[in-house]
Length: 329
Image 1 (tube, rainbow, N blue to C red):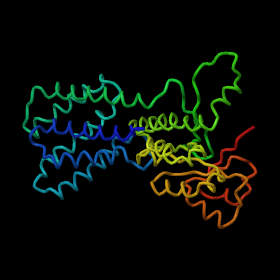
Image 2 (spheres, helix red, strand yellow; image 1 turned 90 degrees about the vertical axis):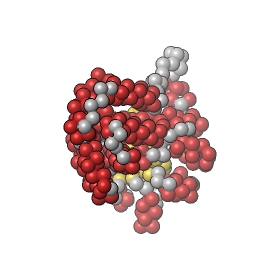
Image 3 (spheres, helix red, strand yellow; image 1 turned 90 degrees about the horizontal axis):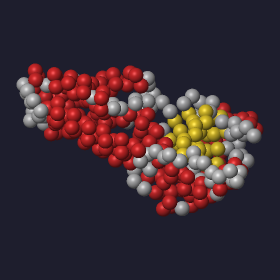
Image 4 (tube, helix red, strand yellow; image 1 turned 120 degrees about the vertical axis):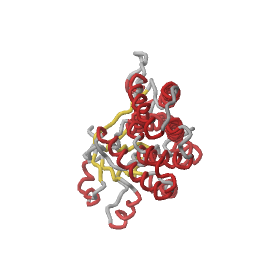
């Protein structure tokens, strides 16, 4: 299964590079533009701090000043063009974030007004060319994001004791004939094979949600996502599944949830995927013995989840990375 998030990021960097070439015309040095675009992507999409989305644009612009200074130090002969390009990023953020084509014309006009003085260019076709490029990119972006949605399912988020940390599940959004009871429907959707296949839908939709949040400048939420124990034994299938979220901007915000008993049965697989950068969360169950040795072993997990009230008495429940989400009967 394709990693659509990585494709989106690749296309976005190409778009930013293209905008910069168009803005600077023949004055922009390829090496400067490429490194500027890469710096923008790292600042814009790989942010590791939760902050107010309304102030994120300012944060990106301020961080880009550091890239400007680094580039001037690296390419002192190109200091003038490096300094000229920098102010454009405040407006390029808008072209990378807009939700409708109606909102981009003002940004394009501002870029058009900025260019003549520092670059001494008066291209009459600039506005038309840039709008055409933005329009094509907008359609491509929407098409990519649409593949990360589903009409038949929704993402269910369950709050925990930790702010902005959610347990995630897939909620079916389909209508069934009245002869089928709710029990029969839920039972059909929770067989081991179906549970595995549901994960492909869930991971795809969650990747889309995280990407849309990041586009809006929101990096605040963390998701605890189920991982069927049966799929841990199927190396090809789990590798295909994890490909969906194999992007740093997704992996930083997702932890794969397994029960402690399943961890004991699949320890080597968990440790292998952990080394590949995937985070895990463990649900404490009756197989867990609360000891110093076992608590040390839990360091492989980003979060420890307690779903049963009886486990809140264990010393492990006092760990700083514990998430409490008591299931009510």
